[in-house]
Image 1 (tube, rainbow, N blue to C red):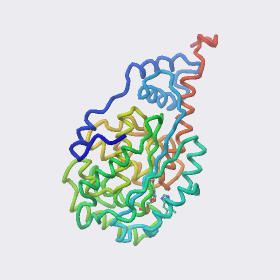
Image 2 (cartoon, rainbow, N blue to C red):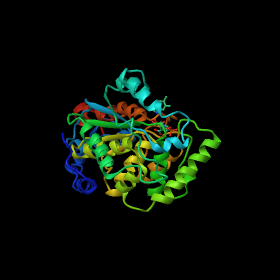
Image 3 (cartoon, rainbow, N blue to C red):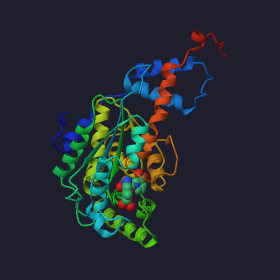
Length: 337
Ligand SMILES: O=C(O)c1ccc[n+]([C@@H]2O[C@H](COP(=O)([O-])O)[C@@H](O)[C@H]2O)c1
Ligand SMILES: Cc1cc2nc[nH]c2cc1C
C-alpha cells in the first residue's frame, strides 16, 4: 500500500497513533499458558515470547505460518573515508548474490520457511558523507522510509528486517552515540574486519559526525543526519509492521540502531519487536540494553543481512506451537501441582 506520510512531520504523527497490543488476547494467552502440561515457567523465555506474540496477533492461540524477511541495501558517502574492510561495489554485488540465491540469508530464510524480499535503494547514489553535512535531505529520508513502509507484506505474520551496506556500521555507531551518549570509541567496532588503523580512522569519522549532528533533533532527524537509506527503510518497515500488528524480530547492530531512532522519536515504538540475536559487533549489546531487549540467540554472528533475525524464526514458531498446541492439565488428565 502507499505510505500515509509525505514528510518527517507526517511520519512522526503516524508513529504517535500506532495500535497497541491486544491486552485481552495477551491475558487469555497467559491464562492458557498457566494451564498447559508443564511445571509453571518450565519453557522459560518461550512462554513470554508466545504470550507477547499472542497479544500482537490478537488471539490466545496464534500460529506462525507466513514469515517475511526483507533485506534493504544502501550505499554510504562516508565509505569513501575508508571505514570498511570491503569496497562499496560489494553492496550491489551482494544484492545480485541475494537475487541469485547465493547468500547466507537465502539459506537461512529457506531453512526457517520464510519468504525473502530484497530492496536495493539507489545504490548508484550513495548518501552524503555525514562529516560534511547531513547524510540525507528530508525528501531522500522520506523516500527510503516509504520504501520500507511499502515493502511489508500485509499477510505476513512475523517480519524480519535486515540490511546490506558497505560502511554501514559507521552510521550505525554514529546514530547510537548521538542518541545514547558517550564517546565515539564506545560505539565503533571492526564491522567487516577493519584493522587497528582502520578502527581508529572509523572512530575519528564518527567523532566528526557527532560534532556536527549530535543533539540536533529527535530520532528521525538524527536518522536523516547520520543514517542511511537502508537504515531508514528498516525503520519504515518496522513502523508499517506495527500499523498492521505484525510482530518484528530485530537483527544485528545496524538494524537495532535504525530501530533505536523510532524509539527515540516515540517511546514504545518498538513494543512489537523482539531482539533476534546478539551480534559480535560489541556495541550491539549496549543498544539492546538501552532498548531493554534481551536477545533470543547469541551465536557470534556479525553478518547482518537479517541473518540473526531469520535464525530466531524457528524459536518463535516453536514457542507459539507450544502455546497453541499443547494440552492443558484438564484435557490430558494430568494432575496439576
Ligand atoms: O548485523 C551486524 O551486527 C553486523 C555487524 C558487522 C557487519 N555487518 C555487515 O557488514 C556490513 C557493514 O560492515 P562495514 O565494516 O562495511 O561497516 C554490512 O553489510 C552489514 O550487513 C553486520
Ligand atoms: C561479502 C559480504 C557479505 C555481507 N552480507 C552482509 N554484509 C556483508 C558484507 C560483506 C563484505
